Figure (cartoon, rainbow, N blue to C red):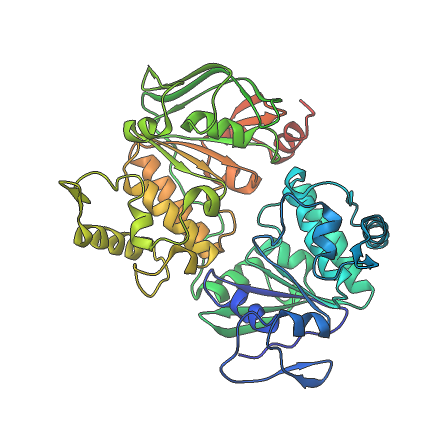
Length: 479
């Protein structure tokens, strides 16, 4: 494939999960060796045998999953490997000053003395960008940079990108979010299954055109669904109070109910208690007070394993830390919830044939792009990892599915597929609690919308009567 990027340009690289976007950029950054072809930088052929070669040329890359060391400070992460030393000792004070000057110059405000583990995801991303700029990056590769950001953080990132290109730098923006591409890109290259299928500009293309190029067929960008036919109540949360890791109350007297055959959407800017609410419902975090009831039975103090056995399914917000064991084969990840039950185990002996057959069936049903179910889950692209988590959770036939950010980091074709599956399961009687920071997703899928602000439910609205502006105001606290 060919790709041409110009200075002073935001060049969007668009494609499905597994289309080869990240692999191509890993070649440019020296993490993967090409088998043939050449790379020209500033008009001359170059050999990039590793990241150090790329950094020397002025290529920087911010990965989808950040490469930061949590216990170290912002400044220590940025200068790591390129430390400022005096008499053989790292000069931390000078490092702090240098990082502070750099962050002010580019409008990337961060405290150089804060530890990475105490920062929000959006601020961690700023640190990654600063790390690349500190090393002299003129071509900055951003791999799925908005996958974990709030709408406000995304706008902040776009301002940074525009400032970088206005200064004559180039930015390659890897994404699958069509609206963002139209807003930020100067040029767009669309990939499908490892090849370029189109080069265009935002002025020449509508989102529907880009989606068709990505997937190879027309894609419905809105969910088609019949009105819900709610049945009996499956999950009820009453007066729930939950603390975060710093013992601050982040879920404050929350009450809500989800019925069979409906999708209840929880809308809110990320960081308003959504993660703690989900963790308390599935038993990953203790509730300080209040109740969680499943089909009328209290499960507030039950361990997570019991809740899963009783019919609670979970699509976690972080697929890599909570959804999958990346080192294990895909087949083993498919049966994580049921590994010790028939037909996957008999008389304490694993039934490999049954495990592989189940995995193969789900891989085909959910179109998970892999060579073999024996490959490690970590070898899958981000979107295919997400489809694997969704496939496993729906494969256990839960009574209620808690879906937290179910399409984060997933391309339009996969989003359409996951949305259709959730609606089909709803129509078959599944109760779905959908937690998403994507307002479009909430408005497309939910039958009722609960708005969460600073740990409290500030409104519960019927989706048919919801106005986007009103929800946005509620999410921002203008209740």
